Image 1 (tube, rainbow, N blue to C red):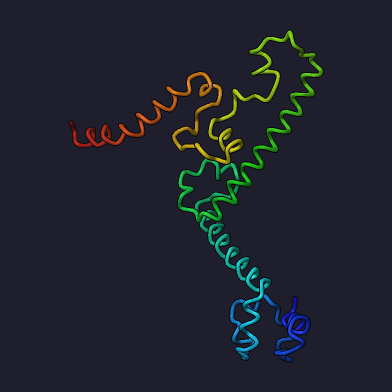
Image 2: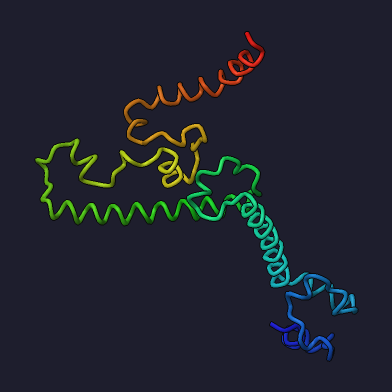
Length: 203
């Protein structure tokens, strides 16, 4: 919306200037005093919910734009690369939340499509109650045995519980021995540093 149209609609034309004809409301956000010198008029404009919303959107845009440039410098341009990116904590929380939400959504859609394909395949194969459990679990539905644990956690729990150390753990192996998988990862996370330090010292 143009600034003059906005002033005509909401303030009965007060503050309308000829040189403001090609100025948009979003331009007002960057430097309001350049376009409206009347502080009595400018204060209620700044208090309007629509102005506040535009200002918030603009700030979010700049935060997300900065995060996007930072990720481009790291050569992270796809959601798959984001999933494997080790330094997610360096990205601003707003951008991280939006990217992780998009990643979870894509994984859920992929899983839904795979489940529909498996359901059709099951109907064609004629899987019923007498079908073996192992076949039904690992062959008759989505191939959860080939899915990575972190992908499953991202899809089902929006990434809670996903750890960089588990990037290569398959869900199937985790379901078999969940405690030992985490115990080994925790052990190596705690003990690797002292071992490396001792070796470097030549002990």
